[in-house]
Amino acid sequence: EAGVAQSPRYKIIEKRQSVAFWCNPISGHATLYWYQQILGQGPKLLIQFQNNGVVDDSQLPKDRFSAERLKGVDSTLKIQPAKLEDSAVYLCASSLREGPFPLYEQYFGPGTRLTVT
Amino acid sequence: LAKTTQPISMDSYEGQEVNITCSHNNIATNDYITWYQQFPSQGPRFIIQGYKTKVTNEVASLFIPADRKSSTLSLPRVSLSDTAVYYCLVGAYGQNFVFGPGTRLSVLP
Image (cartoon, rainbow over all chains, first blue to last red; front, side, top):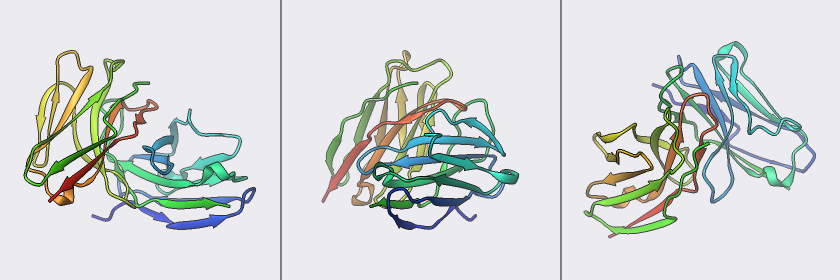
């Protein structure tokens, strides 16, 4: 079974520019997550989708970050404009089952390493 | 939002059993406890999940006491390839669950 795909793997931009990340979850997985992982820290959940609806986006900085999951499959995460503190690895994960309980096993992609200069 | 506390780092030798404890004093009734492993430049990988008592799979065991305020991940007979960061995650679907800083395990020959 193919894993979670993400692109690009690396991205370098200047502050105030915009950037977009793409994620293709494992086929049939209803739930999709976007995380931000700053060097030396654990992943921080930004947004969680079930199919094409948002389950939780309380930690998403909505003034600059946006995400969508059209047709309940692929997803994109956008940052506009980027700040220096956005430098991190952006991880996408998916899980097979829907809610409510428990927190089902998440399968993570390799991540996109973003550097903002 | 359950917060977790783990040791920052641990050292072990090949062949030993390693136990990593996670504290989660404000765990909620619906929360499950999940452990993930992460190697450098990779996304985390699921190890094991439990709600109470003991859970065992082919790679690890998870011990959860009755009050569920802590949990212990047990890795039997570790090898060099088990050197990684281990995260304890507490939460339930639909919540903003949080990965802590993790425990950096170093397995020495």
